[in-house]
Each structure stands twice: as structure tokens, then as C-alpha cells.
Length: 301
Image (cartoon, rainbow, N blue to C red; front, side, top):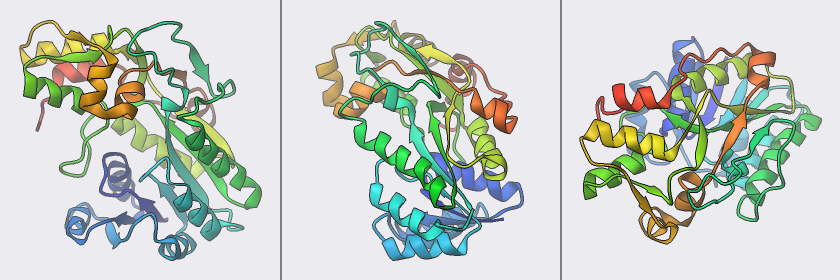
């Protein structure tokens, strides 16, 4: 299968692209800068230089491919519109990457109700997440335009990426702050809980979805959960630092910005992903982010 993937130099996109190459597919990956191309070639990925704003380029590559994966941005509506235009009427797979902060409660690092959400019981999005949810729905609705579309809504992803220098979104920020300051911190009390999944299991799910997903399907991608206080305690143990410290949301926002502090690190995002297991036969192999932090996080870091 000839697959076009955006975000091919990133943590998620690069890992998916490399995994698909290993599975025998031909992968063309979008990168923003020419100097990023060699890293992709070393993984067997054919690079194409461009951005999500290059509408004509996205349309042409979508038309030429057998399948398309958007792993560059969950929030770039123009890119999604262009890819849908290129795929309309083709019955080709289109996998769009979203994130489970769409159910985040911006609790300031407190557990609170910590509601668990399922794929057929999604809440109304907060004002901050309404635009992302609308893009997800646009992808799902494209099934009515002859596209085998799916939204893969990832939770907190851990593990090491295939592209050198790439990193996931949440845990590396906690690690970096701890190394700079000598103190591990979490937002608020750290009682907030996130579902999580290992990058290798994410890669396998994308592979299965390309082959098997019904059109217009939404998936949560998860295999376990942990509170941030549990994760920061594990980080402190690995680094040989003292007990993690609570950090008021306002201070955390100065370090990580509003979006990351309020949602990525300061919300509850608890979900259950049943469809991938039932519809695609997905069998994730990694179940403990805490074990990974203690046993493998510092490898190569």
C-alpha cells in the first residue's frame, strides 16, 4: 500500500511511518524543512517537503496515495479539508489523529469527579476544545463522501519514538522541568488521572485501522491509566529526587503555557477504548506507564 502521512518527522507520525515501512508498505512523509528529509530516508520513508497550508500539495498526494494518515496536527482544519477533497469518492482509508484532551476537564490538577468516557458517550466539548471536536466530526462525516475515514483519539502516549530527537507531549515536559530545577512538579495536587498508551501499541492500531476500519469510526486509543502524582513519583524515583511538589495552576502555566498546563498536564482525561479491540482485533501489549518510567524512560534520554 502507498501511504501518505503528515507529521512524519514527529513522535507519533514518525513512529507510525517507520512501523508501516517495517510492515512492507511504501510511505511518503510530509516534513516542513529540507534538513529533516535525511532522518526520514534513514527509516525508509520517502520525504516530501511542505506544510499543512500547502493545499494543492496535500490534495495531490492524497489523490496519488492508497491511504492517508494525518498525524501532524489535530487542530489544522484547512489541512483536513484539503485531504478530504483529495480523497473524496475514492473509498480510500483516511486516519485522523486526535487527542483525548477533548474530554479534559481542566481541573487544575485535582481528581474531582474524574468521569470515565466511552466512545459512544462523549461529552459536550469545552469552549477550548470545540474546534478540535468539530474537525473530528468533519473527518467522521467524510464517510458520506466515499472515504473510509476514522478518528484515532490518542491518550497520554509514552515510549520512545522512531525519529531521533522526537518526543511525546506530556512526560518529557515533566522530565525536562525536573532536570532543570531539581524538583519534580505536577499541576495542583497531581490527583488528576489520564488514560495512557505505549507508542508501539499506537503504531499497531494505526496499521490495523488502515486495513480494517469501517468508515466513519471514532476510536479512543488507551491501555491503562495513572494519576499524575503516581507518574511524577516514579519520575522522582528514577532521577533520585525528593517527593514531587504540588504546583498551582498559574505557576504551571508560566512554565508550560495555558493549553499544556490546563489540559495536557492539569486535567482528568479518563476514557475506555473498546472499539479497536472489538472491530480491529487490537491487542495492546504494554499496560503500565509507571513500569515504563522506572525501567525504560531514561534510555537514550
